[in-house]
Length: 248
Image 1 (spheres, rainbow, N blue to C red):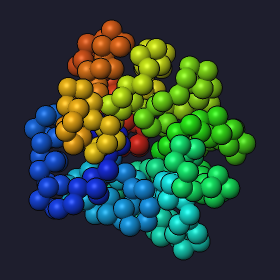
Image 2 (cartoon, rainbow, N blue to C red):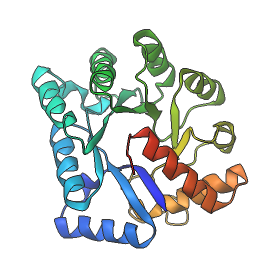
Image 3 (tube, rainbow, N blue to C red):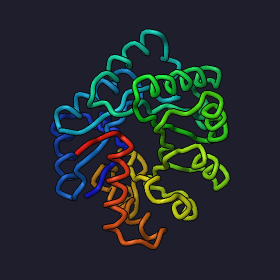
């Protein structure tokens, strides 16, 4: 049984298509997913999808949408965070790859999301692209929440060691960026995700990514760690359930 800890189901345009994606995932042994929001409308939609299909969701503002972060947006995100189906704040963070939102706008938004994760006792889902050191600096400055994950890990080993020392979880997506990093993260601190519909893993490159393919991500992680696939499936699912505070 697999747990896709990060998928963007709101990008699937039609309700029938969403149902098909979820059914396919279930047929392939992927029974748990977190539908990730990137702004207020998508966070609201992620919650609707999660309620309809028995999943979980997140609520927050992606750094490339941070120019929409304001008191009204914060109020609306907080309303969503009060729902028990919403298990995480984010995705949030910093992005220095796409030159769309200035750092002086991204940083205060990220800082607010860190505060919200603490206030509502939710996991924090962090996006970093060419921005890991800045994100780690801000987390050290503010103090991280109890539970936080760097999704779609792309950093180098020194950054990984720093993140792990701070107590971070690490999530690997379809690119499985560094086999050395995969091996370095201790059991109970790593998870798997698709980031679908993006980052389609092998052997499905050229197709639209979907939660079903988290099993392929897990297989790549298992190969890198030299562990049986079923052990990685069991361990990452257990880790994800603990991380997101899911009981049962």
